[in-house]
Amino acid sequence: MQLRSGKLKKPPARICMSSYQVFYAEKAAQMKEDGKMKGKEIQMKIRDMWRQMNEEEKNKYDDEFEKMEAKYKEDLLLYYGGNAQDLKKYKALLEIPEKPKKPVSGCLVYIAENRRQYSEENPDLSFGQVAKGLVDKYNLLSNKERKKYDDEFDKKLENYHKELDEWSKKYSEKREQFDQLIEEKFKRSATRQDLQYQELPPYKRGPRKMKEDDETVQQQQEMEHQKKKDDKKKEEKNKNQKWKR
Image (tube, rainbow, N blue to C red; front, top):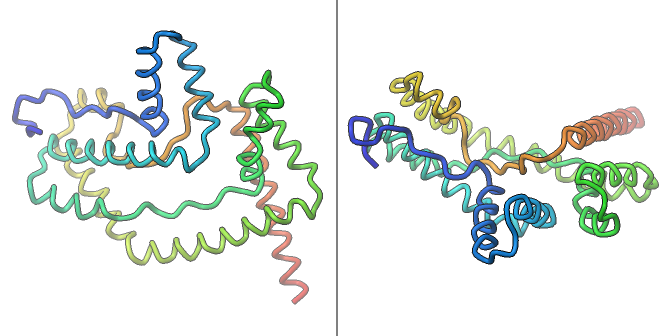
């Protein structure tokens, strides 16, 4: 990778923006070579394949995306004037583990567990309609049936707070240094043309797992509404427990 003063006229291109795009590129190439499907047929087929995959199956593409993203940020640092010392510091900071993620609600766990079967039983429903149907089914569960999801969420939430506290003590300062390193190099060298080319701002984007872009607004709103209901129920439960004590 040549520096800004070299022959490179544009910032390094990000090949994929998410693990889904890594998966899409792989499968699209195979399907085009096969020649049985074209255009929108390929898009729909790959989208359905991705939706039916579980988290373990998606991990392969998550890992590949993170490697691509790390290489991109390394090239970006060099392009914007970084030197060998900056690169050494960057690689050291790159070892910082990702910040712990808050566990999903019991409703979302239920949806993930039952999506494939419900989709097969209702093939005419859209992705958003499947999600809505499963939310409705979850709301009809008895207290006993929902308890296992609530208990599992409580356990994961407790572990999440412990892990977050440990992560903050060990890595929060280093993570800030990591962001500052990339940001300073970018701001020092960026031009208006660079900003337009990168669609503002490339240094802020780290390796993160992303959902495919076609999730419906309706689905997102339903999920958020259910999450608020679960959180409110959890707060009331905790208050009652404290009152009994």
